[in-house]
Structures are given as structure tokens and as C-alpha cells.
Image (cartoon, rainbow over all chains, first blue to last red; front, side, top):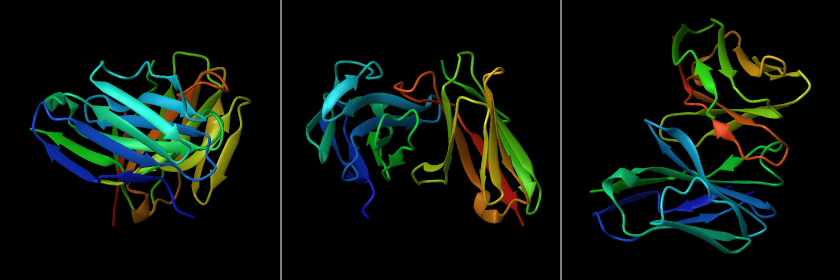
Length: 115
Length: 110
């Protein structure tokens, strides 16, 4: 079975540009999570969805970040405008039920560099 | 609050044992353990639920002390493939999101 698929794997862009990260969760998984990983802060949850509905977006750093899940098989995380401090690895993960008692399956991540 | 992992890093020779600890200031419902190799995604190892259970597979096992709000990951007879960064993720309820520790870098040398 295919795992969580993220694209692009790498993105390098200039400050001020719009960045869109994409994620396809594992088929049948109800929960989708977006994480950001940096050396300083580790792995931080940005937002998660249940059945395509955003449940908790308290980790989204500021209004420049937005996430959508238009259907069960696709989600996007958008940064507009991007800033150098947004440089990080962004992971998408999915699970069958709430993440607390079910494993989360991570995609390979998008390594984002903002110049 | 983010759980605290210790040690931050450990270096082993193949065949040696290691223990990684994860402590929380909040009452815990579950603890997840993941391993991440450099440049790759975190990979699920195991979940421990409230109840003080111990779990294991192969030579990797873990315990969960609900009273102390901490979990420990035990790696015995370490192999080169065990190298990576180990993260614990904690949740305070069955419907709660996970909060991850900063990780423990484990290096196993021949």
C-alpha cells in the first residue's frame, strides 16, 4: 500500500513568494496532521484535520500560514508571503483514528528553504 | 508542554544497551515512540497507553509509569541499524494531539 505522499520533496524560493506544500494521506485514514521540524524547536504540530475538517490550528504560527483539505485524499499547506524563518522540513502524517492511541504515518517531508 | 527527553545524545558500540527517558509535567494518556534516520521521515515504533504497561518488539521495548508521568525506551544488544534520533510524543487524553520531545540522537558504532 502507498504511504503518505508529499510534494515537492525540496523547495527553494525567495522571500515573499507564495509556497504551497501538498499531501496525499493513506487511503482510509480519517486524520491528517501537518508538522514543522527545525533544530531549535523540534517537531511541532501546526494543524490537524478530521474527516477534512480542521480541528486544531493553534500551532499555525501566524496568518501567513493556511491549510486546506478539500477532500479525503488531498491537503495543502500554504505560506504567503514566505520568510527566511519559515525554512524547515514540513511533514504530513495520517492516522486511522485520533492520533493519541493510533500510530501516525509520516510522509517523506518537504525540505523548504526561503532565501 | 513539550516532554523532556534524556539523554540528548548517546554513543554506543554494537551490542551495548541504552535507555532513553521521556518525562512530562502533565498527566499522560499515551506515549508514542518514533525513530527518525537522517534525512528521512519519523517511523513509528510503539504506543503505550495509560495503565503502566510495557511493550516490546525485537530488542526494543518500552515502559510507561503513569504515576511518574514518564516513559522509558530500552534498546538491548544494539545494532548498527538502531542509529537515529528517537522521539517520544505524549498525549493527555484519547482525543488529544501529540506533543513531541526534542529527540535523543543515538549513534551505534561497530
